[in-house]
Image 1: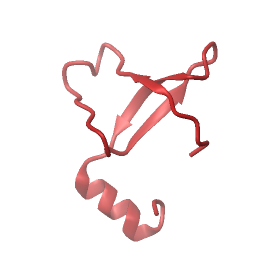
Image 2: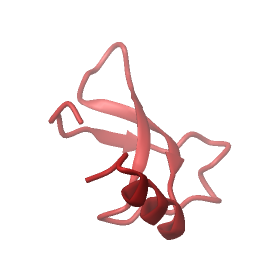
Image 3: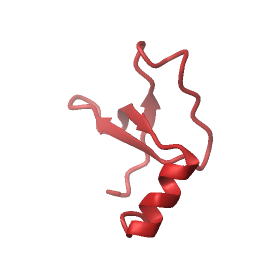
Length: 59
């Protein structure tokens, strides 16, 4: 949302369980040390994205 393009890293606990593709909606936590990198916290599924769009949280 802040317009900065970041390289995301999937933490070890979610590394084998989560695949991120272009166009997926995710929540990230920017690093304190490097603003150009972030950790992926959550990935939304297609039904969750549709619900967020219906409720007006996403455009």
